[in-house]
Length: 114
Image (cartoon, helix red, strand yellow):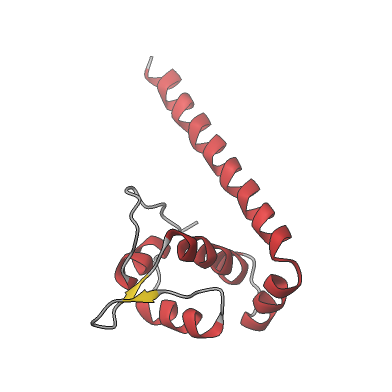
C-alpha cells in the first residue's frame, strides 16, 4: 500500500505533501478534487491549496476505492453516495489490521534479535 501516514500531524498540508503521502502526482490530486465533491481544500491568498486532515481521510477513501479496489471513478462516486459509512468502516478495519500487522512484525524482529 503506497499510502504513507504523515509522521507529523499538521493543520494544513500542501498539494505536494498530499501527493507524497499517497505517492501520486499533484495532477491526480487536482483531478480528484474536481471529480469528488467531498474534497474541499482551503486556498490561501496566493491560491495555493491547503488540505486538512479530513481531506486526507477523504483522499484515502478515494485512493482505496480507485487504486486498491479497482473501482472506476463513477463507481467510486456511486459507492460514496450510496454507502459512504460502510466504506469508511471497512477502511477503519483495514487501518487497524495494518497497525496490528506492524506491531506483530516489530515483535517478530525483536524476538529474532534476542
